[in-house]
Amino acid sequence: MTNYDESTPFLLIARVQVKPGKVDEYIALAKATDEAVKASEPGMLHHTFDQDPDDPLKFVWSEVYKDDQAFLTHVSNPPVQDYVAKHQPLADDFRLEVYGTVGSECRAMMENFPVKIFETKFGYTRV
Image 1: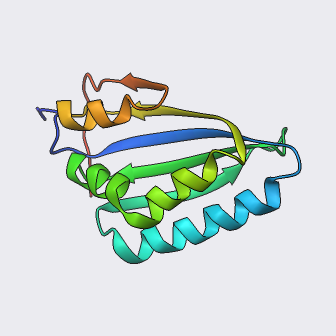
Image 2: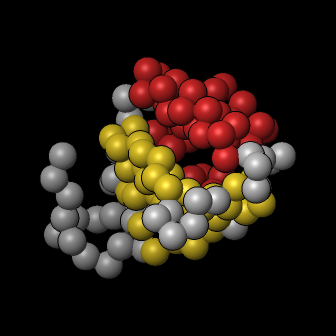
């Protein structure tokens, strides 16, 4: 049986509502951030930015982290901090969903945003 804690992988979904007229600017910001994350965060196992097929103003970041430390590295990464600062005038809403168990330090950082955490009860991970 696996014990789920700060050392196990987890999935983070960030749902974004972009302001009308700001989609192109937001996509450019998201693309630059994605490229910076790919180049600087080996603990980020999966990082995609997807558009809602029914609403062109809604997007979803899907991120899989190796462990809590990978998330803490992500939020302290300068390009990500720049994204967060520039994101605010371009978007109306930003909400997190976390699928997996995280430790107290990671949870405290996530709670700076609207977040819902789904704790793991059982399962397995293959890397």
